[in-house]
Image (cartoon, rainbow, N blue to C red):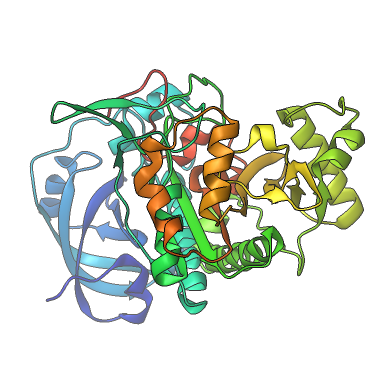
Length: 427
């Protein structure tokens, strides 16, 4: 017999089947033992009445991997409306050690350190697995939307010879005796590839050696990066971002069981994301007009305003000051103090940074000079612009922040399989 997944049992009533998975829970009564089996599709119920088989099950603690062969019977009270009766149960390995948390409980009450220290086991819990199921669905929606729009997926190096963003902290590494850095983003590479493919995207890890110890920062996170050529300005980039968000939400909505398990509150992506200029945003929150950035409190207040005034969970703040943006950011044409860039706020949190880039070689060199930077370390990047680059721009979206906000998690580490931060290098 081929293996049957638990979520298909209702379609196999009366048939002999073979299940394989983990012992999720055992409940022994006077004359029968209920064995709940877990596989990637969910939970299934096995009813054991034979004394010899009951003795076998008694010796198989929770999380032991087993095979069950039996007949499917209809039972409206069982998971999925069917169960396996008259089973044979065989262990596929030795008895499992006692897990650090009780995976069979409906909700995990363990604290964050326990969840992270024992992540290989705690991610087995259905609620925890559902969180990453939504992340995987988001990735599918991201890719599908961009593939349909003529984008090409790329894969870029994670070792770089220079820092990508001036002023940001980087992880230095020894690269065969030469200094190198873990990539802060694929920014330079995706811009260069616009010269080859016009429209590109990448999903992958990025590294930030910024000493933040907050519920919203990680030293390594998953960045969803997009870059496209032949744009008029950053509003064209924002329009693509809107389509990507809609595609991700639609894909997440398709994972209904995971949405239900996590209690995810799916947003409605408006036909056009509301936009406010940075200077107007400062005035709205009562901040000084010379503030170079928004603080978390400002982001929350602006999001409340967007929801109240526009009925939107999303708000784009455009025109960030040039002093706060990387050298490659395109200035606002009518006032160089501002830039054709934006941050997207989602329910009170910065989720996306994007904008239009400089595409003229001379403009980029001049921008570096104004910041007192030597162009020599950027030669490989600059070379692409000597050979003709179209007006272009792009954005980057943090996957873990997206999922944490979507599911209402209080810490981005809860949406990260194996988080890396100031204190954590294992597991």
